[in-house]
Amino acid sequence: MTALDRRSFLRLSGAAGLAAAMPASSFALPSSEDFTFLFLTDTHLQPELDAAKGCGQCFAKARNIKADFAIQGGDHVFDSLAVSKDRATSLFDLYGKTEQDLGMKLYHTVGNHDCFGVYPASGVSPADPLYGKKMFEERFGRTYYSFEHKGVHFIVLDSIGFTEDRAYEGRVDADQLAWLKADLAAVAPSQPVIVSVHIPLVTAFDSYVPVPEKPPAHHGMSVANAYEVIALFEGHNVLGVLQGHTHINERVEWHGVPYITSGAVCGNWWHGVRMGTPEGYTVVRVESGKLSTHYETYGFKSVDPQNT
Ligand SMILES: [Fe+2]
Image (cartoon, rainbow, N blue to C red):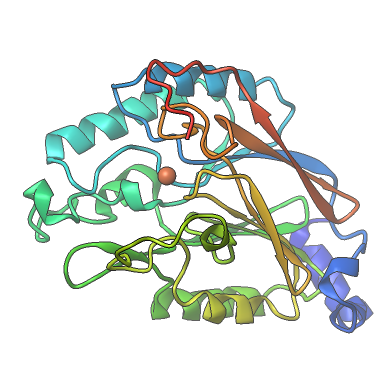
């Protein structure tokens, strides 16, 4: 039975109505096949700090896991916000070359550092044809989209908003919210949904770091209008939301949905362990309609460890 057939069947059979009456966390309808995929995030590719070597090492290990595909959670390169076109292009080229080591289908999520020339320090004009997300789109395609895999509806969100002073913040814009609403409207309430997003929708990050002396100019550690996105998940069987950006392994549950932030392939920006989370990636298992994860590291030794 194809995913489309299954969705139609669930609607017709009334399983959707049954599912809607149940809390999201108790769904166990046999509507998806079992499979494994990888969530690799924050590769922060750069020529310095042995980053390409480390990323290659990570991908070479990850490719040995029996996974159907992988999702890159954002920040493919470090950094394209504040650099010239030549530098940004060379970083994306380096990433593209390194990605070959993974050897499996890879879906891409846009990260803040993937946005070209946004900071005025880059010297790049907003009129540049590759400005902002266009360089990313040229390489990887749309910044938000959905796809089906073995009965699971996957949604990849774009959590990067640009501010008037040429910086970024965590935000899902109105056009994307309208798209998400329409996308989910076509998904039966019982069908499993998995979401990928770079900047977390839900995180406890602010609870375990000191309050900064000077408040940041923009809302950067989570999505400022996450409440608008989360509201759209209500009534759906969201198995989990996979997040990047903080480089810290974390799991927060809200309304029965786990918001799972993954440690980074680059760890602490290629300087070692990041607040207890080493360099690595998340292995995601979908089994009997449930999602479980575990974190794998790959033995990278930083040439400049700071171990913060
Ligand atoms: Fe990052």
